[in-house]
Length: 393
Image (cartoon, rainbow, N blue to C red):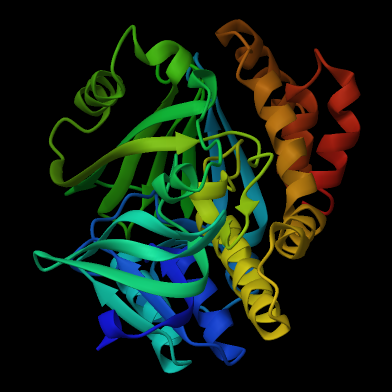
């Protein structure tokens, strides 16, 4: 029985970051327990469900069962209604997260990780200043499980991180208040992302239409916490849907906070690491968290196995995980944050002017990189950052 065992590693949270961490750690030969508070892995969905083909292939071969739409184009809609179409050099997907997340958990289990749902973790165990396990409740009964190391993948403002003394708070301006509704019975281009940029539609953020086939879409928006106190994200979205898809049927709704922030300055301590949303690894410009979360999970899982085999789970040893993150993905993460800070301050008039400038670029020569070079015209010092993160786009 899992409650009567001691594990090398306990992972808290069964999203893509947690299951990927469990998979790579178990694959390296250590004993892994993953605890998920919800009834099923992948439910409820709290995500726009978009991911790039290139990003997914770092970890898995995309399975057609996961894919609702293949995305090859992007459309930007300016505040005055002008549209800019861009062909994507790398295709993307809208996923069915219920199937995708379930399969990621299966991969971890095949490697030997033990997965338990409906296990609500409500605290950590300590041996001096070192994290040494977790405690919580499973089917109405309390439990305590010891481990050599814990990975927190329990979402934004991670409770696991806070219990370990890490500062996981997100500044109000960097916390996006997001809502998404899956709308059925509408006509959409199933191969195109649509992004609406305007303070009228989504101040400090953007509004998206992510198709799930030709007759349904995830339609949502994120509003910067700086503005959400004036009007709720739901009000913004409901007004847009009433104007644009008044006859569509709402088949699901999801809400939540998205940490469009820099990676935490410190996301490790003695016996504990954070990964994914918990460590603020969400792309701060797009709010996309699937691929960055899986990258953080992979690096955390690999580091966990190395640390346990070496018999050293000190903060000093685990710091190699932080160094790996900043080398592989963290530097671009910082650049994305700087670009986001500039773009989020653009007025609707400036956004319209940018669209006018991009329209002059021949369609076959338009790239996302060129769009953002126009967008940072007020801060040319960011040009190098744009060139680096969009190299080849």
